[in-house]
Image 1 (cartoon, rainbow, N blue to C red):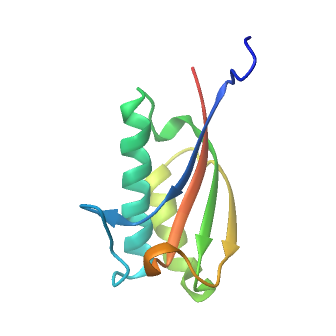
Image 2: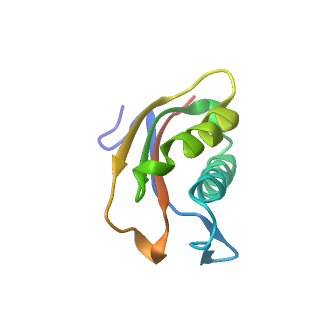
Length: 107
């Protein structure tokens, strides 16, 4: 292994963006759907998929939305859930209610 090589891919700050605009007016569960779609697109660009994600950090501005956001999370990952940490945040970029960071394993 060369210096700087890793078996991991770190993907940060996936916002609920559509066509370059943060969809901050959408409910948190829908925002998570958009953020996860953006994460999946980024992984697909490198020949990876959501099943390669083994750790996800979810930043959420309204912890009262946790249950609805969790339902979206469960639908998106289906059988194998990556380890997840949910962090309450006061404010996120673009007025978003959610954003995600992920760590994916390289094949």
